[in-house]
Length: 343
Image 1 (tube, rainbow, N blue to C red):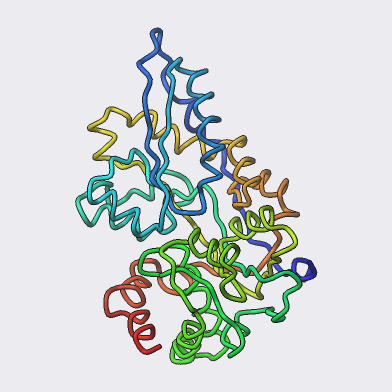
Image 2: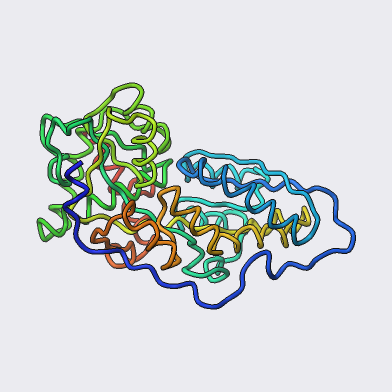
């Protein structure tokens, strides 16, 4: 796949320092407590990661405390998942696609404190990702960069930014590419409007869009999380390829306790340990094996051949943070609503 070999600069990963996280700080009990069920409400592409992480954490917790853990997982578009928690879904932890979706948990019922990002390293993001292109085998439309997505012969598959966190990363990555190319917000707006005229269907979440592309054979290119692209290649083999664009966005999916729920259920200690253990070296290696980018420099180095170097910009650099980006682009009546209405 030649596009993977024409790559540029690395997303740097800082070390985790010397702090001790998770299970190492849990109190052992002489008499094991009754089994406990933990509900992790997450976004679409993390299904496989947490299917492997949950038994790993359960084993470490059992070794430390003697307590048995069971897990429930809920997956969907990140925005819809946040709304489900606000509406009463009994999550112990939320592992969502956007900081803005967790901010919504504070703003709509004080489910988490305002400073939730300060509770874990890297603003409570134990892994990162980015947005790349999945194309048909052999790349028959010769799609190389963001500029190709507005060609009249190209159909683009991406989810709905009103419900999907991944879709917002897609949108903002395209916007910033175009702003840099054109030198203006007006040029970026015109580019993104043209791109969405090439989108035949807006699925609710990232996994739905992947299904539309790979199983329903819709579109010429799928805008996808990097880990989702690798999963599609593993599943569909010779039927798909993927392309790294010249620049993309540093996606930082955050995690948090849902304070109101864990305090009511008495699960704060185990939920906190569950999130902290994501920063352990064994979990960071697991994260890399699932094609997310670990925060641990050592784990990232072990998976460097599968997570190649690419120039990335951050949401803060390009848009002034999630609050500003959400207000301008994704709020009701914002730029996305305006350009999509005019399709």
